[in-house]
Structures are given as structure tokens and as C-alpha cells.
Amino acid sequence: MFAEILRVHPDEPQPELIDYIASCLRKGDVVALPTDTFYGLAVDPVNLHAVEQIYQIKNRQKNKPLSLLIASLAQAYELARDTDPLLDKLAERFWPGPLTIIVRAGGKLPLRSTANTGNVALRVPDAAIPRAVVERLGLPIAATSANLQGASECTNASCVRDQIGDQIPLIIDGGPTGRSLPTTIVDLTLEEGRWEILREGAVATHEIVMALQRQ
Image (cartoon, rainbow, N blue to C red; front, side, top):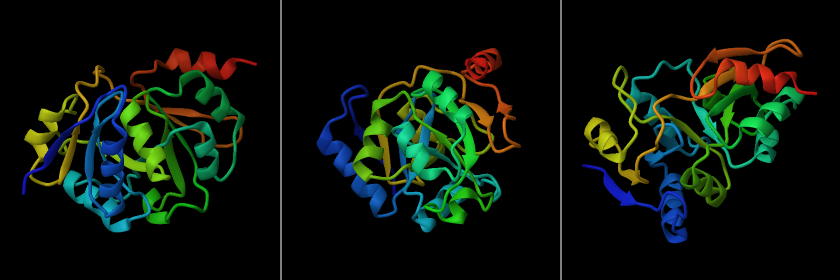
């Protein structure tokens, strides 16, 4: 088996193609698609067999949760256990964009989808294709970078094909992603009012500090 490559317009995704992608996710397929940083592997987060497939493809440690791509801040509130004013400040400044925010997970997600941590990493990507898929699916999509463990991240569909095209059924070609840095990851699950940057990426630390100091 080798992956089907489906060309989708990066700025105005064709509705019939988004329907097809959503149907593939519903049946448990792993789909590679572009985000605003790198190409990612996406699955339905409540399909635990599909989630397990991502871990196998990536040879990913079982205690490392996947990120969830969402379409709006409202969707983040549906998935978080507690709302946090820091979440509002970061989302207002950086979403859609390359910022992943870790919050306490609510009860809508299976514990396995959080790698049994009870936390969930959320982001609204500045990319039309994944947002359209999320809206059509009616669910967030669980995602991680579409590359083999230890290999470079992919900024185009051909890179995904070369690395893992024999392990997944569908690659969405939305052209180059245009960034060479991963998302910045901020953890908001510490004591109230505290936060920590777990990885500095496309959003610089000083930008996070400035956003959180705003009244």
C-alpha cells in the first residue's frame, strides 16, 4: 500500500475534498495534512485504535500526549476542565497561529487521548485545511508531526510520502507550509497564575511574556 496524495487548495479548501478527508478520519484512517508549521499526522481523537496507530508509526512514547487541532477558542473551552484567564490572553494574541497551550482536560476526551496525563495540548492553526476539517468533522483532530522519530519535520507533501508514505492511506498536499520552526508550547496546568514554556518555537518567549502581562 502507498498513500493516496490528494491536492487541496491551501487557502480555499474545496468542500467536497474536506468532506472526503473527514470521512476518512471517521473510519479510523491516519491522514497527513499541512498545518502552519509542519505537516502533521491527524486522527479522530476518540477513535483509540486510530490514536494507537499514530504512536506505532512514530514509535512515540506512550506517555507523550498528542496535540489537538481545534477551530476556535470556544472549542478549547469545551475541551478544558477549567477556564483560565491566561488562556484567553494567549488565544487572543496568538490564535490562529503556532502556539500550543496545555490545559487540564475535561471529560469529553478519553483518558488514552491525553496519554493518561489528564492534560490536553490545544491549538488553532493558521491554516485553512485543518480548520475546515475540524469544522466538518465536528471534533478536534489529534495530531503530531508527520515524520519518523529522529527524522526532520516535513514542510511539504513529498517529504511525508518519502518518510511514511507506505504506512498511511492518505496525504493531503496543500503546498509548502512556509515555516521552519515548530510551535511554541506553553503549559498552563501549574498552580493558579503560573505558567511555563516547555518549548520555544515560532513564537518567541518575550512575546509570550508581553501577552500575559497585558491587563
